[in-house]
Length: 296
Ligand SMILES: Cc1cc2nc3c(=O)[nH]c(=O)nc-3n(C[C@H](O)[C@H](O)[C@H](O)COP(=O)(O)OP(=O)(O)OC[C@H]3O[C@@H](n4cnc5c(N)ncnc54)[C@H](O)[C@@H]3O)c2cc1C
Image (cartoon, rainbow, N blue to C red; front, side, top):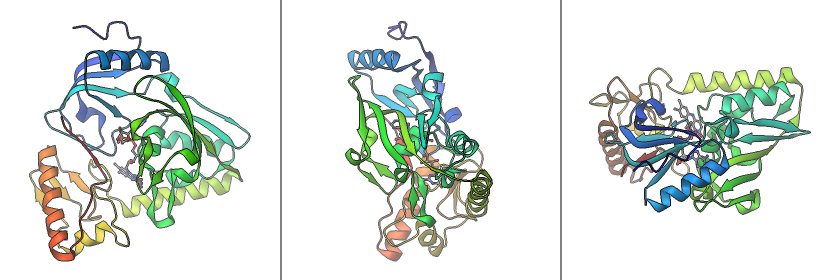
């Protein structure tokens, strides 16, 4: 069944998803597709519906734990040039969902626009960051602070523009998961470029100091429970350095699980279960994964 033959974008069969996640974990996607533009995406969605295939949307894969068995369905990535457009007018940036956060931060700086500096060092795309409401806990800032509106496609192929007030943003989540984010309008403030550069440097330094970037990971594995730091709770359970197979709790930041070599999703899930059990027993707190777990 060559159902994809009329699509204009790129497609690959049995694509190893470990090549598309920062964890370097994930079995093959039966179909891996990169539509050329929204028309191509709409055609793809129609076909996927017709053949009743499950569909998964991937950005930079920096918040994903994907099953070692892979995905028996379609994995969709918006990485074609159409989804990587970046433009500005006055204090507004129009950013395609495939644009990396690092590119957005540098583009804003080059145009003397401030406000996005706290995103420096987060290894995701704009689409993934808005869907996850990515941010920085210490400053209580997240991307929702910048969003004016979001252009989305629903899974029937209809495009609409959602204003900020129509979107529910919460800590590391949003109501956008039922849509495909195409682009985002962001509002920033004019500032001196040197000041913006210094702020970017400070955020990069902070993340380098506090996060464990020595080995592949998906960043923080659990969400911070209200009023607590997940990392501190895990540390107080004595779990820093705990290892199952090639998945290990970071010695630097206990809420980071590292892939120490040939780590598998199975190892990571076992380690997550152990952490949850210990934290529940000691503090009676249920840790909730921040990382999205894909299996089907
Ligand atoms: C070393 C490291 C440090 C990190 N530091 C931080 C940090 O400081 N703060 C923070 O908040 N996060 C952090 N993260 C987590 C992660 O980078 C963010 O959540 C990021 O925003 C995810 O973007 P992504 O493109 O990688 O999304 P993915 O991981 O690919 O996907 C995440 C979710 O978004 C959905 N999604 C992706 N694209 C779209 C789209 N176009 N439309 C709709 N849904 C979409 C996916 O389906 C999935 O449910 C870190 C991760 C790592 C590895």
